[in-house]
Image 1: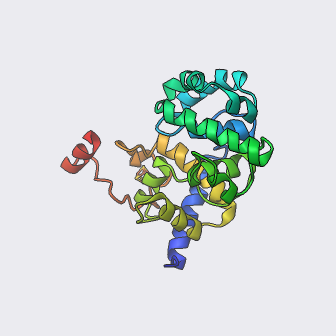
Image 2: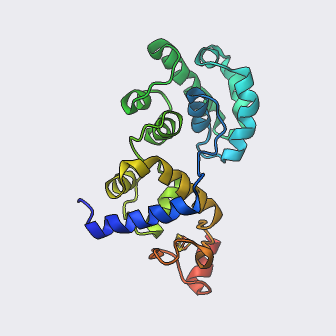
Image 3: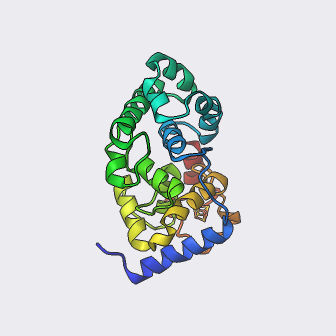
Length: 228
Ligand code: SF4
């Protein structure tokens, strides 16, 4: 169902307030090329960006191209990314992905959603990160755990799965805001609207936010929620 005018207005006000609060928000994965961003994003699944940045500092000195990753000994690549977790699966995906980049794209990262999601280990979220951040192409909104939580609390979606959350955000916001809004929400989720302790008293969205699912401070439910 298409969003109402009021729902769009609400989303836009939130987007404007976040833009004012985080004018320099950007992807926190350190990278110097679309390939490095693609690899870092694959590594970031179930892992913090800080840990990924520590690992990629040496990884990107050792493997400088898709060809390098494609030709690597799998066990060595696994050891190189071990501390990011799920390292066997990630190493397998990175290698398969880079082999396809070499075979089908001349070693370059493609610039379309269809081509990106056809790569092993690359879903819509990773593709959106690469398209938005590396190529400045707004095809969708990156929906991670922070964007999911904030979108619910702020009343921007009722959807449970990332695909429908993304659809709701895209319908409510102009495409000029799709790339930046996820960076801003991620920053706000890390700094203020944390999962267990949303700091509503010091939040720039305080007056706009319906705080859906957030128990009032000091209540039993709030205390229980912070323990979960
Ligand atoms: S008012 Fe509270 S729940 Fe709403 S965005 Fe701010 S910290 Fe999160």
